Image (cartoon, rainbow over all chains, first blue to last red; front, side, top):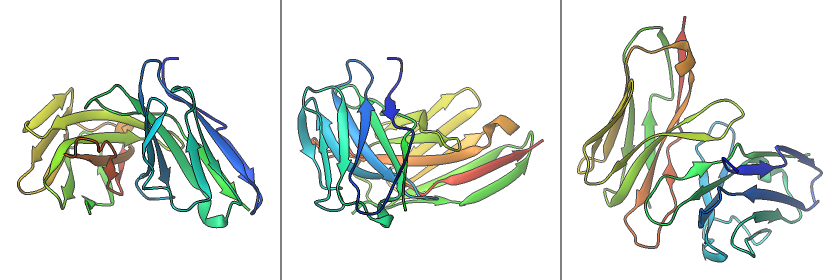
Length: 113
Length: 114
C-alpha cells in the first residue's frame, strides 16, 4: 500500500485479556519498528525487525509483550494478560535498509479497562 | 542513555508569526536527527531529516538546524498558519551500526491562532 497500515485503530480490552495489534509496512521496507506512546509523551522504542529477524527487543517492557514478523512483511505485537498501564498508542514504522527516514502508521489506541 | 528534551512544551502564537522550536540531546554520537509533526489521533509525519554531517535542511517554510557538538537542533517555521497547529517531535538516531531506534523528545504542542 501507499503507507504503513495498522489495525485495529482502536482496541478496548478488559484487564487480563490478551490483545494482538497488526502492522502492514510499506511494500519493500525491510526494517520495521514498534513504538509505544503514552498520552502527552513522545514515542518510546519497543522492538525492531530487519526482514523476519528481530534484531532488537530491548524496549519491550515485560515478557508479556511479544512481537513477530514471520514472513518479513506483516508484523504482530501481542500483549498477554493486559494491565492498565499498557494503555497507550502503539505506533508501527517502516523504512528502507540503511539510514533513511522511518515512515509511521496512524497507530492503534489501546485502552485497558 | 540518550535523553532528548524539547522546549517549550506548548506554544501559542498569532497567525503570520515566525517561530522557533528547540530540541536538545545529551549524547552527541548521533547518526541523524529527524523532526516530525503529529496531528491529534494520527501517526507521525516526517518533516525534515538532518544527517550528522549536515548543518541544516530546508523544506518550504521550514528550516531545521543541527549543532551536534552542543547537542542542539532548532526547527524554524516562517509565516505560521493555523494549519501548522500540531505537536512537533524531534528524534535522534544513534551512531551504532546496528542501532536504528529513534529516541524522541516529548514534543512541543503548537497552536497558531487565526
